[in-house]
Image (cartoon, rainbow, N blue to C red; front, side):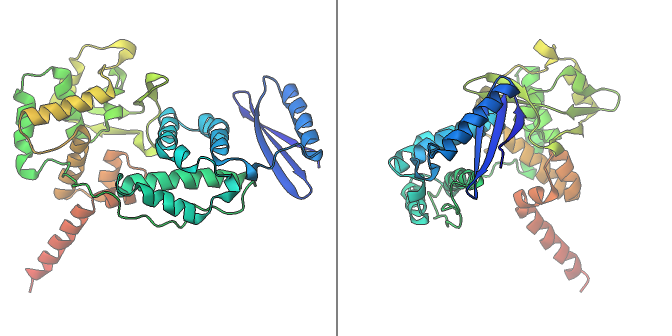
Length: 352
């Protein structure tokens, strides 16, 4: 069977070849299709003359670096690239150093996860396990392995961390809004707080807003992009988190007027803050005024819980928040679902 070439764009080509009932795949970089064809011919020669390395005997760390170069860096967003890099550098590389890819079994994954349980929460342990699942799935996709040793690995409890409620309570909500209005802070910071609270926007969505996103006539803002930050590129504009994150959100007319009064920054942006800086500033502002704990993202949670408490259906709340589906909203705000179920039962209690 002749080999095939798939043009993946950006000078990346996927080479495929079947030999002795075994399928081979390889991603290469070539400046022209003709050079890619030459690389395919050379690669086929290596395979047929047994010069192609059996990747199942590769060291795990070497395969992981190949996974980063061939898949992660070519397909995933910068923040996700750095997320995987951090997991690998923090613990995975050290633990699996010296292991060959085909030597790693499920018990090794279990021992690795268990070794982290006193240092990390269950959420972090899940991130490590899922990273390993993704790596081994890639090996299966390339026909290097037949099974994934990281699947079906149960997670231990992990480090117990007291979780603070990250939402403004109903009884304090009016006081917080009044404080935002009256406090001596720059108008743009007041508006960041108000847009998060009244519109339920994510931090990266607020900081990406431009003057063109504001509809003064209909009193809504259009969310169609987001700000991100990476070590390699600094602050940059990217697409929103999901397709459903592209949406419009209505705001009170007085807030729209305040937004329009802001000085427009570079690239028509309304806010020119580092995402991490503004999150830290909100933390300090809450602490300064001795408020109950909430973060900038906690204002988004407050939007959701306030809407639900006032009888807005979950599908509408999901649309306001830009969740990918209603089940996401239901999963995050289960406590409000349970509260509404209790209220529903009370209606029938009153009838008996």
